[in-house]
Image (cartoon, rainbow, N blue to C red; front, side, top):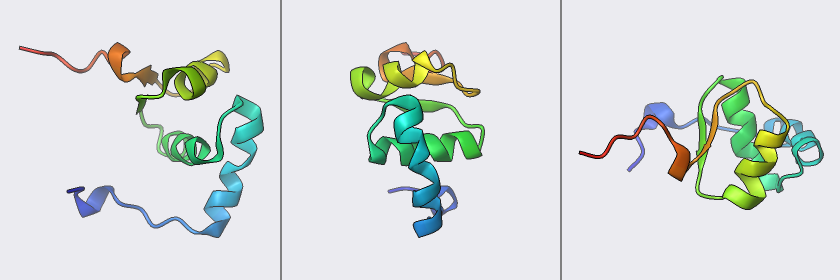
Length: 78
């Protein structure tokens, strides 16, 4: 269950505003929505999709931290 404070209602304008990220980063439309949220909130972006999402975003050197889950430095196993 996701805590409601982490849920944000997104409308058509938000979705349209993310569309340019598809061509800028060479990513799929659904991934552009995740990236747009991370960019808007200056958040860390973590994904399981290395080849078609994370690697492509990293090539453009975005102003946020971007990780494949296997590279995520904030996770420590005990």
